[in-house]
Length: 480
Image 1 (cartoon, rainbow, N blue to C red):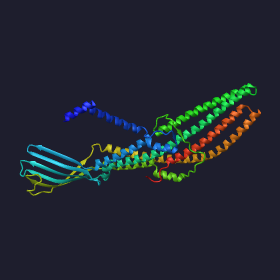
Image 2: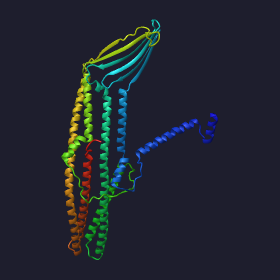
Image 3: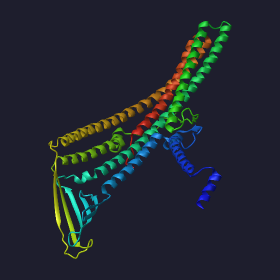
Image 4: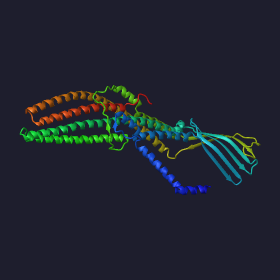
């Protein structure tokens, strides 16, 4: 029946059993490639128009750096389970031996207790045909510990402690990446908005320069303008076109920057919904209070403190290695003799054995001493690095606070300057119509007005970016 079924399968589908195995392997490889593709490509299509909130949401879903941080956290969780299993999960040992008329076997279960003791319950049997009774059996337990190592429990738990520290570091790193990513999206989005508005200003400037050149040529044709005015108008148009090219490049670069953050193909077409930047945000901050909050909860500082805490345990364990390495083992048994395993025709005995061992190197533990000094030096470096990080975070917060106040004042001044430049341009145009100034003065007035508009735009966007960067430094008020 099986042969018939196989024959039908081959006839119907055209492949043999070996073909089927090969195709299954190919299908698995295809599935793996698809999984990898989904991992590195966004799951959602890029919207034709992006708002800031939508961009932030897409980054949380598609950003590859964030995805790596999440997987690193999962890896750390699994590593903690592995470490726990390696230390406290019992291990089974089965052994046997046969020589002449003697056969022996032993089964033991060894594990480390959480109080620093190593335990091994065991059972063993021995058959000797030359003795009467022929079988000797025993039940017992061995308890051992390093006598002078006061940090023995710490040593036994060190792999678990390291895994727990790595898990904490990964969790903190993930939160830090999430907060930093939000600022990166803000920065890229507002750079697009900045470049878009600047480009529109430059486009209007090019149109105006073209119209102005056309007017000058008409005036020149009837003798109402000098040739130098045409040259000035051409220079003005050339500069306006060069500025427009520059802004178009800046816009494309800014769009690619956001696409990279969101995980989409570069040069993918999209537009943004501009944010309202006209008003000054009401952002409340207190550098002293925020710095205290940062010292306590900032993820980078917390990770450095975790490394310092783990290194303290390593130093404690290393100091123990400089002490006499004396191990004391106590074995208690219940032994029985009979012609059958675990029989008790003969009186049972309960022997207790003590094993004392001493181990040392012949170089006076020079390597252990050098390692201890190395750990201490590395610990001092960690403390210095922690202080540097605290200082750098405080410096950034203070610098951003000063920058926010500077930008608020710059916005107020830029608004006044923009209105003044508008009035100046109107006055210059009236003078030009009256023949009191040449077209070069008109060009300068227009360029100054463009510059005033751009300065105001830059100040408004820079203020929002400064606020976003300040917020990206601040950790949550309490750990999640």
